[in-house]
Image (tube, rainbow, N blue to C red; front, top):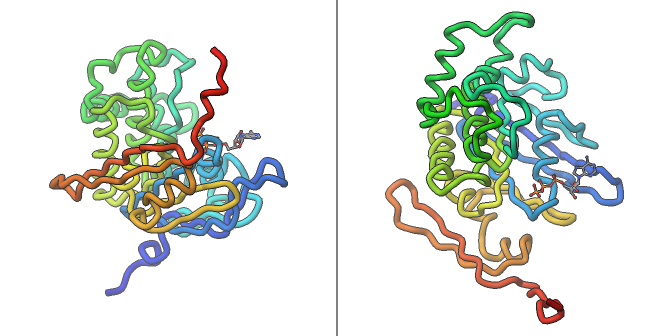
Length: 279
Ligand SMILES: Nc1ncnc2c1ncn2[C@@H]1O[C@H](COP(=O)(O)OP(=O)(O)OP(=O)(O)O)[C@@H](O)[C@H]1O
C-alpha cells in the first residue's frame, strides 16, 4: 500500500547532525534518524551527555555544526517561526516559574502562534485552556499564580500549554523527572494517547523503563558515540552498562497494555571508593 512522503520519511528527519560547544569535544556527530507520524523517540544519556543540546538543535535554538533537521518535509531552519511553532510544541524542564502569570494564562500562552500580534486572547481561548487543565486533572490550580505551585505541578501546566495548540510534533525535556508516580504515569499515558492521535514525540528521559514503555525508537548519546534504533534493541542491559556504567536487570511485567517495564540497577560497573572518604 502506498504512503505519503511524510509517513515514509518521518515527520522529524535528522540527517548527519553534529554539534559541539568546544570543537575538541563534540557532543554528537553523524546522528541520522526518522521519527514517523504517531511515533515516539526517547533520547537517553548520562548527565551532561548532550540530550538537551540535541533537542535545542532540533528546534533551532542552537545551530547544528553540520547536518540538518526536517520537520514535516521542510528544513526546520528555513521555516519561519510562526509556521514552525504552529507545528511544534516544546515542554522545557520545569524548575520554577519566575513570572506570576496564573496557570490559566500560562496555558493560554500556548495559543500565541494563533493570536495576532497586539491582540488579546479571546474568551474561547480561556475556555480551551480551562478544558485542557480539566483533562489533565489540574482544574484545582487553574487560578493560582505559577510562582505558587510546585515544580511538578508546573511541569504538568507546561504540558497543558504545549498541547493546547494541537501540534504535530511534541518535544519534551525530561517531562517526568519532577513528577510523583501517578503524574509520571499520566505523562506516559498522555504520550501513548498522543501517538494514537498521530503526534510525533521526542522525549529526553532519565528513565530507561519509560523509553521501553512508550518509545518505538531510542537514541543513547554517549561519550564520542551514539546508538539509535528500535528501543528494544537499544535499551538493553549491555547498553545500560556500556553507556551508563550501571549493571542492571530489565524486567517486563505482564501488564495488559503492551507491558510495563522495570529496570533494576544492582551494581556500578566502576564502584565508588568510599573507603577513601574521610568523615
Ligand atoms: N551554553 C553552553 N556553553 C558551553 N557548554 C555548554 C552549554 N550548555 C551546555 N553545555 C555543556 O554541554 C554538555 C551537554 O549539556 P546538556 O545540557 O545538553 O546535557 P544533558 O544530557 O541534557 O544533561 P542532563 O541530563 O544533566 O540534563 C555539558 O557538558 C554542558 O556542560
